[in-house]
Every structure is written in structure tokens, then in C-alpha cells.
Length: 240
Image (tube, rainbow, N blue to C red; front, side, top):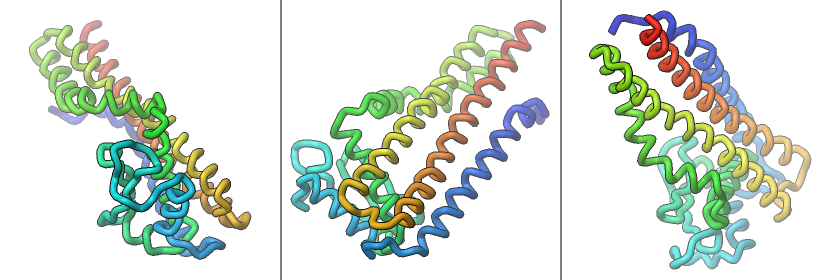
């Protein structure tokens, strides 16, 4: 296909926003990853304390889900920390697990926020999980159907492709409240367990979590603008 300048008009603002969001994450992590938290505990220590407070025995995953049975494991890379609901396991990168920084406790608590959501059956998380198979298909098949329908001049196929592609925007829309809620739970867990021992701790945790949330806002904006672009493309072809 030839380059479409209209695509740039749609996507340039979100590209700039995404770059800003990534810069905010890197900046916040770089700053607060160098500042020790008041309790001088690592991300791994923080995770263990929070799990202990939830009744975790430190044993392997049991038959149930949730904080009381969450396993801890390592993962390579930087800012790759994640909670895997299928294995009920919290994976911490080496930098987070071993560094007694403000950023480390923020990240560990955020991922445990997802474990708490899983345990509770949090609605947006369940919906997002249900959408994963459809989104995987729609993201690869949608744009093929859109372009194929336009090339074949079968507009119905293109609109069906738009429908498939729109699942990505729905997924991003579900992801945003999931991530915001996980951060809200993280703040509450840290505060309730006395792990925000100073104003600087609280300020740093907020800065790290707010910066991370911005990336999901950018992701949603990108998905929506891509969808609008394809709608305008198909709609314009139909009018012509």
C-alpha cells in the first residue's frame, strides 16, 4: 500500500502522547528506583510482608486462588514484573526484587493488586480475560479484512473487519480500569500495612503508579484513534 498521510494525522498525536507516557515511566522509575524507602525493604520483602498479612504461608500454590496462595518467582529484564493469574504467581525482576527503593515496593504492590483482583473476581479483569482470545484473532484478522474488502470492493467485508479490529479498543478500555484499580489496591495495601512510613514514600509510590497509569491511557487513545482511522477509511470508500 502507498503511504497514507491521513493515517499520520490520526496517529501523530497519540504517538507523541505515547512517547511522553514512556518518558514519564522511565523518569519516575529512574528517580524513585534510586531512593530508598523508609523501611529499607526490597520489592521481594514488600511482597512477602503483604502476602504474610494476607495469610500466605510461603508454600507452593494451593488449590485456591488469591493472595493466600500466591507464589513468588523471578523474571528477567527491566520493568517486566507481572502477575500471572493462570499460575497464581507474582514474577519480580531482579532490580525490583533486590532493590530497597520506593519504586520497588510500588511495583510489587501493584502486581499484588492484580492478584487481589483475581481473588475477588473483579469484573473488568474477568471481562478482559474473556476478551483475550477474540482480541488475538481480531487484531490480526481485522485489518486484513478491512483492506481485502476495500481491494475487492466488498464493503461488507471491510465493515466486518472494523468490527473485529474494534475488539482491541474494547480490550484497552477494559485494561485501563483494571490497572487503575490495581494501583488503588497497591496504595491501600502499603498504607494499611505500615509500609508508607514517610511522606516521601507515599509521594514516590504515587509518582511511580501514576506514571505507569499514563501508559495505559496512551494505549487506549492509540487503539481508539486507529479504530477511527479505519472507520473513516471504510466510510469514505462507501461514500465515494
